[in-house]
Length: 180
Image (cartoon, rainbow, N blue to C red; front, side, top):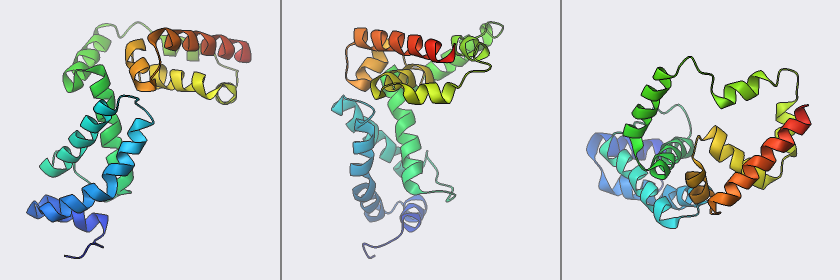
């Protein structure tokens, strides 16, 4: 087969025939890109390399199925980014199940995020977030949006845990001031 097969053709060949050549082409096409993107989210090259391997292993095994309704790069990014969060948490699917069960037990308690958002009825949250420095936004994204612990965010961002705490505190203070 030629080197110019489309992404869809490669994925169909991998799924249907376990075509090793198609898999190698897909890997060569996207592994460097995925590695670069994940390294932008995690400073630990070893973790990133493992996540890239796990992502492509899921493609090979067929545990990740492409539905042909979007770009292959986006599909691979979703797989890889979820696996990165799992790797940083250290416990993958079992940890997600444990967290879901804990949320069910404490359902009546509002989360910290819910309490903050409930107090921001009339403020310009999006504008306030844009005005934060990139360093403070990165910490908020890691800890609030991605739900990482301070330690996990420190590994992801390549900074000490104390710096994560300080930046989170500064970000919260700046948001409170902007939304008051």
